[in-house]
Image 1: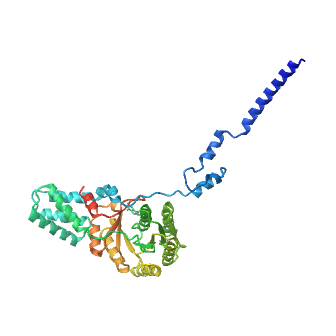
Image 2: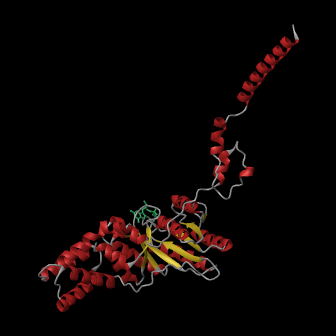
Image 3: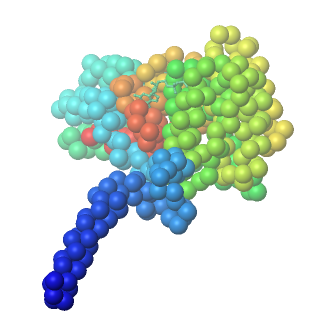
Length: 377
Ligand code: GDP
């Protein structure tokens, strides 16, 4: 063979070896497509995660270490958002009253119908009589010439009945310590749900919260509260089943102090077997908590659908603890909004919050004017 032939054979061998090497090399290197799912599972937006130390082979561990927290709504403007729920259930009362008062001629039978409508809304006998007297007086003095003046009159009288001067602010600021809120009420009224919703709302308003699961008699209550707390990053202090509720409440306040939290909200047990049992238990919870901190709010949860029965429950609780505010739940499912005025009158304590649904942000600060406007919508 000539020199040229040797050179040509050498070049050919090099080309074949190079091509084979390149082919095999591509097969052994993970392709971009192969590796895409692994890298896609790495959280890339969290500020807390140092991407340099992530082990790409263990993305599941990374995911569980970044808790997914909810961002609850602030409490401001919630009643306005939820007012359609009020209107749906309660506007029959408002509209009924408007229709009656807009009649050309208002006689005794009209007043009887007004009375019937008010009693059916669970306003109670005494407030109903008072409201009718005020309305009669205004009709006598001013006359009711058209539906719009009837509306103005009714709006003003309903607002006065619900007493807009009552202070409905929740105490969520205390000097140099967490403010302490006890949530009390009969089981089934929505007490634990309200405690959870309240924690969300406080977190939405920028407060730090510790929860105390002192309803140790209802097995599911602790777990239920734990779930609410987990969603918003609030520590939940629980005890073993059937633990002393006062001990759990005590520990919750201690934890809130240790964390420097703004608010501690304590769910209590609500068995109403015997009045004296309840009195002993709740009284003890309050006394034990007060060894560490004053109690700023005692919120009584009442189920609006229970009507006048709720007013009687409120009386029992008010004898046991100083109730500072009422939470009326399930107002979305009843036309018995009159209970708001009834219970306020009876206890001299304002309705501070209303529950308007089962959704996590369906708890709103109560506002008289928004409520009355929803009734008359
Ligand atoms: P507890 O025994 O008093 O702690 O009662 P729960 O908190 O377990 O609530 C009892 C039921 O009432 C649950 O199904 C809640 O979802 C429901 N509930 C609570 N508040 C409201 C509300 O404002 N509206 C409606 N529609 N349901 C509510």
